[in-house]
Amino acid sequence: MNQTIDIDPLIVVDDHSDDETQTCARDAGAEVITAPRHRNQARTLRICETVNRGLGQMPPDLDYVMIVGADNIIPPSWSEEMIVRMARNGVVIGSGRVRGSKMTRTPRGSRIVNYQWWIEEGDPPGLYREVYCWETYLVLLAWQKGYRTSVYEDLVSSPMRPVSSFTDWRDRGRGMRQCGANILQVYWRAVGIAATKDICGAAELLTSYLESDLESDDWLVSLQKKLIRNRLGARLRSIFR
Image (cartoon, rainbow, N blue to C red; front, side):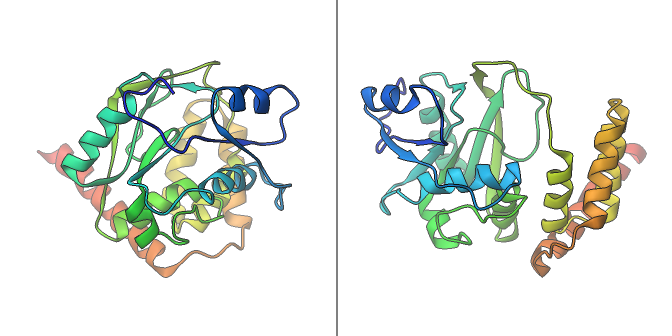
C-alpha cells in the first residue's frame, strides 16, 4: 500500500495463521482468502498451493501481478521501477534482491510477472505448476519460449526477520529432478553445498535426486542440456581468453 503505483486488487492469502493476520489485512483494505487444507505434505508444494490460491482470484485484465512474501518490506518505488524496466526491455519475469541474501541469475523471492504473458503462455495459464520446482519452472518456461527474465540487483527489499539459512534439500533434489537437471548439474550443486560445510545437505540433495521417480517434460531436459553447454562454454572462454 506504500507503492507509488496503485496495487489493485490487493489480496492476502492467510495460510491458517493463529494470530490477527486476517483482521489486520482487512483493516488495511486487502481482500483476505484462507488457504485450502493442503493436499501435499512437502513444504515446497504447500507454499505453491497457497500462492496459487491467491493467483486464482486475479481478474483476467491485469497487466502485471506482484507476488510478495508476508515478511518482505519493499521500498515505495520498487514495483513501479521494476515494471518500467521490464516493459522497456521485454522482460516477462522480474525480481529484485532481498537484503542479506545471495544474488542469483534467476528471479526468486518477491517478483513481478507480466500477467498477460502468463495467461497466454503459462502451463497452467496464470498459475504456478504444482511441482517441486514451481518457481524455477516458470522461469525455464519463459526461457524455452524465448522470453527474457531479469534480476535487478539495485532494487532491494528488506525482510522483517533475518534471511533463513534453512533449505529443504530433499525437496530441492526432487525439484531438480522434476526440472530436468542432469546428474552433473546436481553434483556441482552438491559440491557447492559441501563447500559451505553442509555435508548433510549435500547428501540429501544427491540422494533425493537419485531416489526420485518424478518425471520431467522433454523440453526441460533439452533446455537444461543447452544451459549447461552454454555455461561450460562461457567458463572455458573466460579461462583461455
